[in-house]
Image 1 (tube, rainbow, N blue to C red):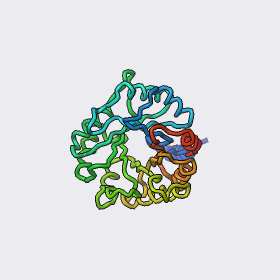
Image 2 (cartoon, rainbow, N blue to C red; image 1 turned 180 degrees about the vertical axis):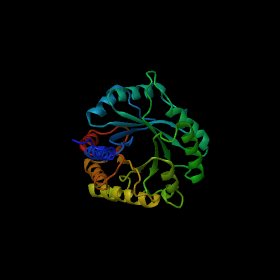
Image 3 (tube, rainbow, N blue to C red; image 1 turned 60 degrees about the vertical axis):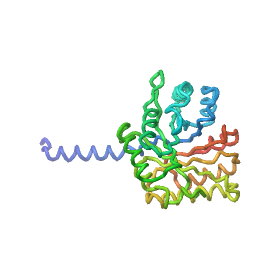
Image 4 (tube, rainbow, N blue to C red; image 1 turned 60 degrees about the horizontal axis):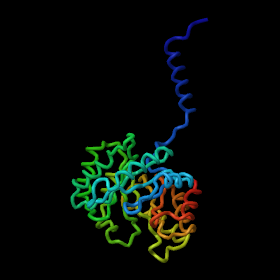
Length: 283
């Protein structure tokens, strides 16, 4: 029997590799904001971080969005609680995304605080899983680019940066694309997290209203940024909202294939019915 020549062996090897590769499923890279989360602002930290983290985890929540600073506070306002929340969350296989409310009248000063907080390590060496900038005050392209350029220089191009923005449906004039640098934000952040707060407008206080508001938020966001493949994390309205409203919000997220997770921003602390509705939602 003749030995196969070298060319034949090469062809067979390539065929085997190709067949094997086709058999391996390809998974999309996970986004740091994937999953379901609850937001905590700087005035409403839980009194008992361990109990709070356990409460969230038991209700199907896997991410805490924790405010760490404002432009007029220290870089880390509540150091001991921040440490405990990060460590307690990670013990339960939960993520912690830090966020800061940046005025951007001093973009380099805001960047310095942002970098300090993002690099913070707890006594056991734990860190934030990502960091977000809440952009609501000065919204010019120049200031945003100065801020993000300095942050990227310090944290690296692969560090997950999230921009908390207005909903394009917001009645604030600042959300208007003539004033708000939507394209600049989309080009400088990895994920956009619009504040999808429908409940402040009476006509949207229903399941259908929340669904419509959320749907239009997604549609206009892609239009204003000119990005169909935009990474969107929807921050839902937890300001006295009903289970029906939250269900409408979540249904819109599902039907429009929101690709970077969902969360609720509660009124002080999330209500049980809000937690139950979000916790039962299957992404």
